[in-house]
Each structure stands twice: as structure tokens, then as C-alpha cells.
Image (tube, rainbow, N blue to C red):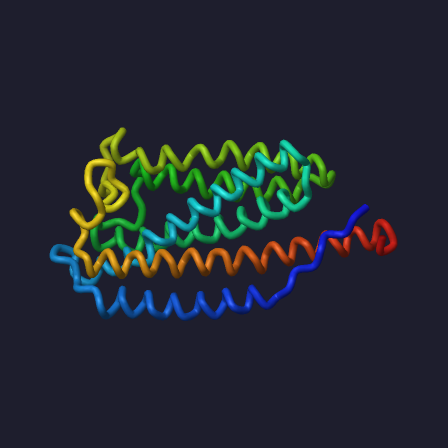
Length: 235
């Protein structure tokens, strides 16, 4: 059985350096350069973290969806490792999204949590992929674990369109999107300096995501090589 090829860590180090620089620049623009919101004041600045965090979580679960579909089609171990790695990081970013939203919601709505449609669907998304990780760890048969996880990963991703559209379909406390709106271009609804800060932070979070994903994927490959070495005597 062929061994998974080893990857050089040079690209990961470069990505890590770019991530650190972009995060620092994003924090500067979000906390200092961008003006306070006309209505929410400095409380609005948490959006420079909250919005990039949830969009990065969506990206992560999209990768789970694609990798899961590829695994169900081709049964390539790399696709399974990618899906599992992305699911772990997606759970992290979704959890951070809920925490950040609660910090914003307490002074804005007066409560840390409310069973708003968007909040509830986001919590369901988190629970689905926590269940994904639990399922993968509880099923001992590797093939069954991978197939079951892939099916759940595909189904779980379908919750994301519901989250995005929930503010249009139901009466909700959560405000409609300011940027991802079909009726307006972003600069018509957001001050340019705020849009710049938000864009820089989104790029920073995407770089951070791919940095974490590269580390987790390499760990998954290393575990797979070690497993194959035990089973096949290093063949």
C-alpha cells in the first residue's frame, strides 16, 4: 500500500508569518483606524471579529462538504483526512461565533442568548458537527466511521443556507446582512473605512484558517503514516 507523501513545512511557516501580520493589521484597522458606529459606538467593533469568524466557519464546513462528497465518490483517504480536519476547525470557529454574538447581544438585546431563528440554527450547526466528531471517534471500524462522517458532513452543510436566509424567512431579532445582500452592493450600506477594516480582518481569518487547516491536515497524514507503518511494517 502506497504511503502518503510527506509535505514540506516551509510553506506552512510562510503562511503562519503572513497570518500573524494580517491579524495584527486587521486588529489595527478594526480597533483604531475604523470610526465607531453612529448608533452602537465602539460595541460595533466586535463585528470585525464576529463576521469574519462565521464566514470562516462557513468556509470550513464547505470544505467538509466537498471533501466528504469526494470521499464518498473516490474513497481517497486524503479526502477523509481533509474533511475531518476541516470539521474540527469549523466547530472551533462556530463556537467562537456564538460567544462573540453573545458578547454583542447582552448590551444590545439585554440577554446573552435568545432563541432567535438565526441563533438557533447556528447552534444546530454547531451541534451537528460536534456530533460529527463524536461519531467519528465512537465508530471503531475506520471505513464505517469515514462513510458515516461523510454523510453527516454533507447533510450538516445544508444548514448553512438556512442560517443565511433565516432573517428573511422569519421574524428575527438578528439584523439582516449588511454586506451579503442581493439588493445592494457593500459600499452602499457600509462606510468605506469600516468595509476596509472588515475586509482585512476577513482575509486575516481566512489565512488563519488555512494555517490551522494545514497543521491539522499534516497531523492527520502523520497519524495515517504511523498507522500504516504498524500494520504493514513500514511498507
